[in-house]
Length: 485
Ligand SMILES: Cc1cc2nc3c(=O)[nH]c(=O)nc-3n(C[C@H](O)[C@H](O)[C@H](O)COP(=O)(O)OP(=O)(O)OC[C@H]3O[C@@H](n4cnc5c(N)ncnc54)[C@H](O)[C@@H]3O)c2cc1C
Image 1 (cartoon, rainbow, N blue to C red):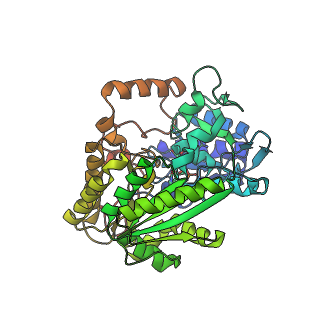
Image 2 (image 1 turned 90 degrees about the vertical axis):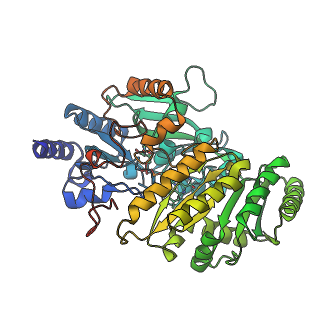
Image 3 (image 1 turned 120 degrees about the vertical axis):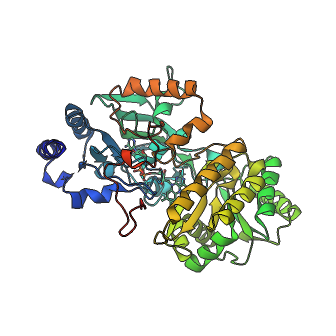
């Protein structure tokens, strides 16, 4: 029966979009079962629309067959948001990748959802403008996915996350009708439905067009690398800098384990023998940047920085950032697999929670590298492991749960920017009451009464997230039936 329905789905999608815009053979759709995290599940079909009208038609076909729809950008979300956990159609927006309009006078661009984040800034750079949200995945991740997860990034400390830079969206509702939310100005009347769509992880509809706010390139930028012997000193300096009333445009922390891998991979000038470093970027008017750099240097010295290096050329800055933003790939030098977490705590709790993270790693005999957006208190512990080691995944998952618990116990939350997806939905009751979740579920139902728009995400499911019952198509690592890798 399911096979027959899959065949009908494939035939109808091909009729609608053409052979070259639909994948339905198991060996083809398997590529869409993964989003950089631990979970996997393949769809019945993947459709590649080129227009909003095609997206609406795909949604209507899926609806008529009572099948789920799941929006997909670049599939770098990590938390399983783009994974079709209950099968159905993945709507891959990669062909809707055009910048439709740039209005420099009003600092606005209108883009399709499949535009890669960095391509917006590249396109408007000659105009002295940029798009501020800069996830480390910005060379690959799409604006649709950034909206879905309300992406942050190193430079979101001063400028705010994606939600602060989206003025409006066009949305195909789960019914197949199309609505325009927001517009070209901020703070319009009525409910902030654009704000609701940002961070909804594709559960209220498919975004088919985005109006983004652009920012003016600052006249002066300074990037400093402060070197410490311990993570405790570096994290105390983070609170110290913000405590001085300075909000750097970026304030990133990398611990010793991360540094050694990053430097071996990128040769960017990071000190491999340090306990931790802070990468601090200040921007604004020349005078204030110079003044603030002096304050940052003093705070770092007060917190026992052994050395502070200021990158004095754009090339030196770019090298430091390329290494930081490519850091995840360098972890392969330590272990073949990693499980990246994403919790948020108050900056002042950094030393305590980082000590907890280190203890968790030791308890489970797992190396954990830390490189994260320290200014936001957004931790990214990377649990490093080798999936070929029998039974290791149980330890990895347990360590992950303990990191979430430690963050929540410190008054923090379970995701800063990667979303909840299917990775952390069962942890939502740790931070929301039943009444909170019910209100959110009712809002979602107003958009998606059938619950077929990215089901199994964000909200706790009746079964555990890591229960095979909700993963009908999950892949199993060869030779390791217990591993969902
Ligand atoms: C190495 C690495 C570094 C990263 N660094 C950061 C970082 O610094 N900051 C950060 O915030 N994140 C980071 N991420 C996570 C991830 O890249 C971001 O969340 C990004 O926004 C996801 O974009 P994507 O196009 O890959 O979306 P996908 O993974 O394809 O989708 C993400 C979610 O958005 C939904 N979605 C996608 N497109 C649409 C659409 N058109 N309409 C409605 N919903 C949609 C999906 O259904 C899913 O729920 C990183 C990931 C990796 C692998």
